[in-house]
Length: 124
Image (cartoon, rainbow, N blue to C red; front, top):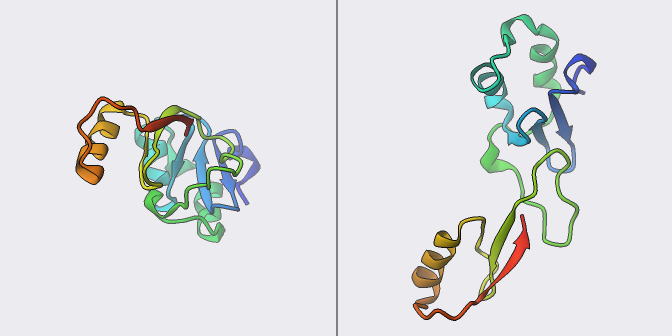
């Protein structure tokens, strides 16, 4: 799917219909790939017609928000970085790498202000 000359820059994960920038290990929506490569990595995308012509034929999501997140017991998406983070023990709605965000979630969603730890350390 991805032209061979770009397989060191961009990979495609068909299970999640995700494009992954292998230079910075971020998932990228198909609509934003050109802008990402030009602005972030200074790649002259206009000269790379092979990739430009291949993109419409790749069934990748258009926007990053449309990528489904792997379930906790599934393998991570290859090419993405894994971060140490936190998961709320009271619900499945919150996973974050920011402890302040976890505290805010506890207060807003569960009305907890105590210092009791009710989250787990996880890999995200």
